[in-house]
Image 1 (tube, helix red, strand yellow):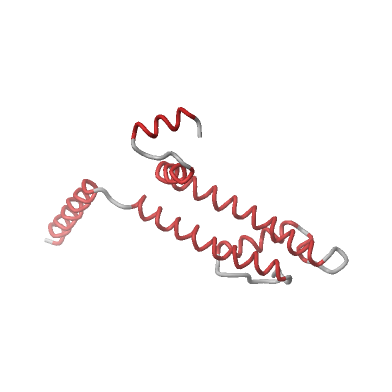
Image 2 (cartoon, helix red, strand yellow):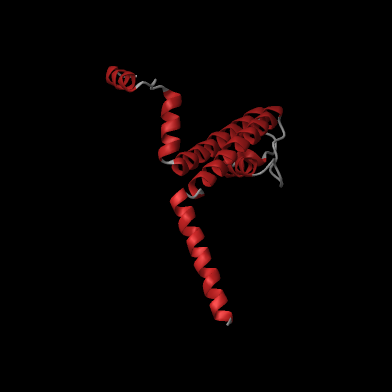
Length: 147
């Protein structure tokens, strides 16, 4: 951390570290941070699946993971669901371990998406009052239209 960042953070009464930077970015633009995190995780686990399956089994055996897109497909299945389905499944122990870590990380990322979506769609007290007034006006207009 630079000397200026330490001085400014000390003057404002907080510690500017990596965790603070992550929290700040999550509060300022949560969707962008989470989409970046998901994309980075997808790429990282695709590479790990590719390395684990191709390097462990060797190039002489039949291997569905010789194509990087198959490894990306398995990584996306693990990140978006609770496991692997279909024809491309990891067969080595290292590939299965990568699959487990991928599922655990996907649980964290998807729960953060849900929490941030809830926070984004949460109404302020002013918006709640406007909603109640609009709902009341709609009910009154329906009563008059029935007469």
